[in-house]
Length: 189
Length: 189
Image (cartoon, rainbow over all chains, first blue to last red; front, side, top):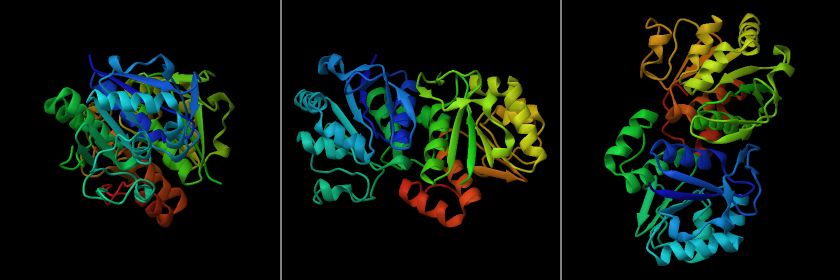
């Protein structure tokens, strides 16, 4: 079974986090939702509180196939400042394992030095990362090497489907896309 | 301020519930997330647990502008069987107030006898409601009188935006649609 870590911190964007967790679990991927400080409950940017599975302290890169970061500015800043998240991102990258981030969260990848040349993010967040390589609205999901990035709440289901395609194959992605009624996902998925 | 009730029960569909709550709160609508039995934490169909604000026992139709039901089969069946949900749906309908449901949840409206002639729902759920009036994939969101219905996880953001349009106007909906990067929502939104 594939294992994916989704770290969340206060102020995470709820549609993004929940779309990723929900879609990946539908694809029978083991999703571990981790807090940064052991809190059982974490409140998002829009006041929705969700329960975590574990503390990120307990997680080693060896057991992971992928790490996926949801956006939201406050949540992203916490992920960018957290020593465990930054260490795991660097370890995953060194091992050539998959890393993904959506909305503001590519900033946390940039902070860890793992973002590749081409990327996307929520419009204007690129000003805090770099203009060069920013793919604007050319695709809902951008892949470069082992790093996948996406744009915002409206692309979160498509981003999760692109992750399913990567970890479980094209057929699993196609079946889920139809089941979710997410036919609008673009050719990048 | 507009007030919207979102009742959730074990097995609710997480993308649908969270997309509705998130988008409506972004539009400065007061969203009350209610359990059916006073449970603080409710687990969804894909193992995501979210926190409720109150027990539905505490809610009267007088304070509400709208009631919105997320889908998920187990959650929907609980909403269809719950005396408070069924009473509130009938009271809201009698007062001509807005009622909305997505995915499997139009079944709970049918159970309360408040579904109007035209509706949509998750494909195949219409077999448990009625074929006549089912709008298939003609639109992401169907309105008939005071009742709004939608199809599934992939249409949840668009459904929430249609609710924002109804309660806060076209301009608020348009601004949010752009901010969420949900440009794919169809003309029904």
